Structures are given as structure tokens and as C-alpha cells.
Length: 259
Image 1 (cartoon, helix red, strand yellow):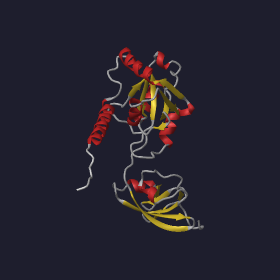
Image 2 (spheres, rainbow, N blue to C red; image 1 turned 60 degrees about the vertical axis):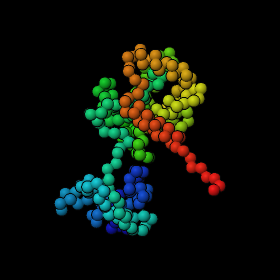
Image 3 (cartoon, rainbow, N blue to C red; image 1 turned 120 degrees about the vertical axis):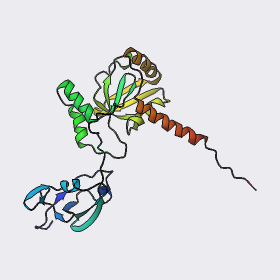
Image 4 (cartoon, rainbow, N blue to C red; image 1 turned 180 degrees about the vertical axis):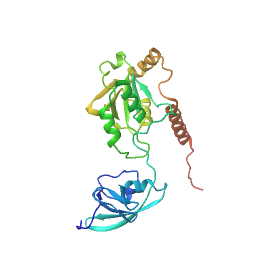
């Protein structure tokens, strides 16, 4: 940077944003819509005051375009970026929606949400440090991605020894990286292997004999008076996917022969 230049360094970019197509890590943002950005990330506002430069973005309507001037490898360039709302990896608190869940082998799987974090803090008078860190720092890599956790373990002989593994993120099912709760639900319900393995955060692992855990799930639901293994939204979504898959399989193939 030349001595008269000021700006802020791009350290990371949301993969789902329009900025990901134009900005690069280590770019320096010099101007936002023609307004110079200071080294502390502020811009002039109403002549005397200074505000954070991202406030200029918040003043725009969805799908409006911002002209960004950047310095990249000692060369100045301008890019046009379409601004649109992005869903956070951990959804904000929701008051009009029942939580999604899935139960297998006494493990209650649920997406991490701000509502869950606040409920945890109210119950235990402390914040789950690791989950809060994920909520603050993780960015979504693709649409529909969720952080799936084990919120609770309903004790049963089948999960003996795994009772302390609540509040951990579920990363893989049988070596397949999960994208969200719906993905985990389909992987588990359609499992054809003799055993099923869950890879969790902190290098923890849960392994069940699939048939035993499947049978135990019904017993656990009865014992704890739980009417369903999954929330209604999850079952409806899975039924819709299965219905589309059946239609695709029944679709007749075109036949070609000699005329």
C-alpha cells in the first residue's frame, strides 16, 4: 500500500455470498461506493461522525449493487457485488416454530440454533463454550447446511457408556460427512450395514449394531412416552424426497429400435 492509502484486509469470505465470486483472501478494501475506508474499518458519516463501513451495506436494499474498490497484489481494481441477506449457519432465535429432532438408539439429534444455546444457558447457568464458538466462527459452505448436535442421551442399555457425549457436534455417519439433520436422518434410516458409526466433535465416536439400536429405539420411545422418532417437518421432508425418488424410478425409459 502506498502511504496515502487506507483500508481493511479481507481475511475470509462467506462461500454463499456474491462477494465470493469477486473478492479474494488478502484483498484490501479501499472504498465502498466511493467512500474511503479507514484502517480501523470506519467511514465518514454526516461529515463529523464515523461509523463501521459495513453499516453502508446495511443501508442498502436486498439485491442492490455495491461498488467496491480493492487493492490486490499492488493493483487497484473495482468490482460490483450484489448484496443479499445470507442465512447464518446457526439460525437466530425462533418463537413460532417447533424444534426439529430425530431419535436413534436414545440419541437425540437436533440442529444447533440460537434458541438451543439460550435454553442451555438458562438451564445450566452457563454457556456451552464449544457450541458458542461454532455459532460465532463457522460459516456455511453450502445452502441448507446445519450444525447437527446430540442434545441429549435417553439412557438405555444400548447406549451404555455414551451418556456423557451430549452437546457434541455430529460430523459423519458411516464415514459420510453430513450436511444437515435431514441428511443424517436419511443416512440412518436407509442404512444397510450391520453396524452404524457416528463421528463426533473432539474425536469422539459412537458405534451401534444397527438392528439392536433400531429395535431399542422403539422401546426407548415407549419408555419415555415420546410419540415419534422424528419431528413432523423432518418426516414430511423425508417422505417428499422418497416420493420423488419413486417417481424417478418408475419413469419409463425411451426405447430405440430399427424402423
